Image (cartoon, rainbow, N blue to C red; front, side, top):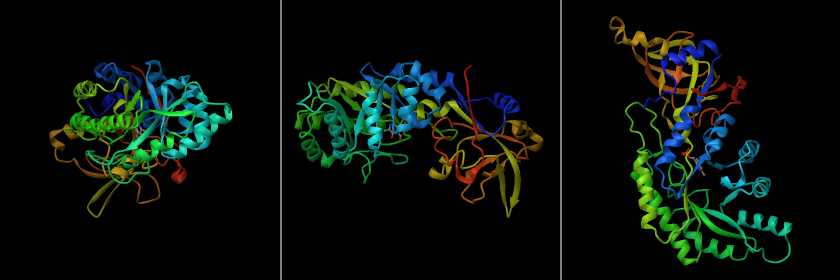
Length: 402
Ligand SMILES: Cc1ncc(COP(=O)(O)O)c(C=O)c1O
């Protein structure tokens, strides 16, 4: 599959008619990916879109119409979903530091809350007992707990879970104490858990190996603490390629692996949940920016673009550039008379800081006004960037639906 949501001609045409820099999101491609993933997941696996990857209302509305569940992690994301008319029963709320205001909004919306420890539990219990002070409720509110595994996790990429120290969740070794503490609450009960092991993983067998760890933790929780678990949230982390030649995640293998896990764990009668963000929307987005100026400096070719880390921060965080093309210059690269003129070029933005780097990539010779298209930018692009830094205008976001 191409790393670019727009063909060269589509990108050139779009940039002719719209101001750059801008993001373009293909809703049809997002829908296609959602349908493709849903089709390979076993019936007992729910699919939730992780809104943090791209909270654009057009994308949220499309996934809502397709019947997706949603993972949210802030009051802003909760409100976005409320405005989109998504019922609370289709939303899960996670995050390592939930404010009381956020918890109360989530509770009022009927959202499933994934707590990170007894502190969250105490505040929820307090809210519910103030609302219904007398006696034990007929059925306590079902909550999930995020568990941070002790070991057995493999990660080939940036850490979100892993097995080291973490601000997230309850450490696996502390689970007995946590579950004991939960017994003192009348209005809430743990009926689910979440384990998010690793991010941007393109190897289905590694994802499944991590999910197997999650299920073994769940089994011990269920048996030791006699819990009736109804939901095991396996987190996101489905990876996408960021460079030509990198393999795609085999989603069929993922679906089959989840099916096998369910069959191996016959003790569990509930549902699994996966909550990808990047995989669903990363490939649906393109970022378009023009070159402002070029400079040769002591053997290095620089191209200064209209946007930098204020629009795309991932390359600075991970050291990996987004795939990039120069559509108007493509003919030049293919022209035998000009062969060999492609060179490594350091891409920078217009910010008055030397931190403003988008990576070094091989490109044809560039000049002012040339268009660059960055692929795989539908996830962790616009909202992950440092939009306010240096007070440049924010880029526009456009949704296309072919
Ligand atoms: C709780 C939770 N779920 C899902 C995701 C989405 O992860 P990804 O976009 O890698 O699939 C994240 C990302 O940080 C997360 O924290």
